[in-house]
Figure 1 (tube, rainbow, N blue to C red):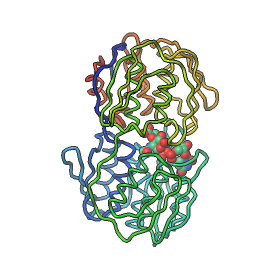
Figure 2: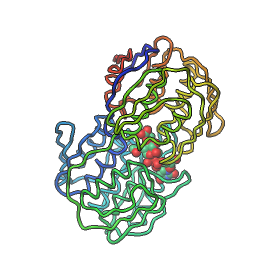
Figure 3: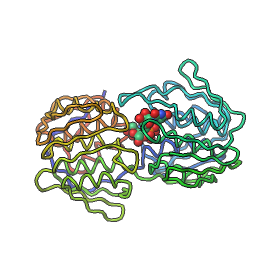
Figure 4: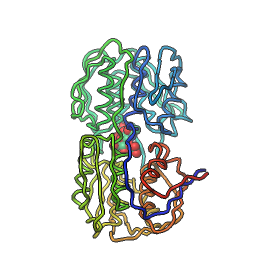
Length: 420
Ligand code: EPZ
């Protein structure tokens, strides 16, 4: 298994280019199943997760052809409607092929996604919404067996115990594009990735209004046709590099980003004393002064502070002055990174769904193990600021969501290498 070795305390300097958004790419790749003919997706990040989604589409019979930085997906030859367990279990995001398969082919068999280290990953909202549209759904031997004679537009309330659901909104929106009549989705997720998906679907010929708000209105159409579409930048990758610049007391320019998608993160960084300059699609972050001030964070659905930035920001707060309280409202168990950060010199304790993060700490390099995508990113950030050498194992977690991480950090001057 590959490991990453980092010699810390090198202030990062220079420019880094943000890749396409993983969490946009996955539902958009699934959405190509809805379209007749061929769709071309540009700015697709080369990640483990996008590779897995393409393998699922391939296993259904779609024809996949790579171009320069883009991929073409033709769906005429789709004959199989079962997403295999060995692919779905490696990536929860696969659940979002359920809606498109049902809408276009009126049947789907998708393995239950199972849980993951950030907590149980229920899909009750997905199934409730699809059943409301007329799908017959059974759970048998760990698989979701779904079929529908016809999908009919309905008013659906999609709010759950934790607020809106990103992928349930995606699944329902996709299914509704080919349903008969109008569908209203109340308490829809407002994430930029949901807006990106809606824009792609409308490019295919769908009629979706209200994307980015909690009320989606979808008028069903007869068919959708393949088109070309460019994916938005990855706001979580950009946020991760913002923290990398701050935690190493460097100066980093983050290009091809979408600053408007990072409002809550920028607000917290500025509250802690970090300096961020925004020029069109570039964020310049600088922390050459003293250490930052501790600030409190509560993760919320967009436009609140993203849960996917919680672990990374926690690493930064370990070095800030004072104590910060970081509360995780989306995935209350998403604290796998705390144990490993404490082994590197942090002093973090958990009180319910909050982490009490003592500041003014010093990270010291040691051997650590990655556990999930964003927890691993937090370990990389701590290692970049640590005294001495850190060895991170199970780095395949990072490969799921960060394109060319070692190369991009090397270009910023980090002393980092990957060994197998
Ligand atoms: C998406 O997951 C993202 N993944 C996650 O990013 C992200 O953390 C999450 O949204 C929240 O922003 C992709 O887009 C591929 P949810 P999703 O449904 O859609 C509960 C990363 O690191 N819930 O919005 O699966 C759920 O348990 C990943 O890139 C139900 O109760 O998340 C959670 O507490 C990690 N019932 C809350 O809602 C349901 O049917 C929000 O989850 C569905 C979800």
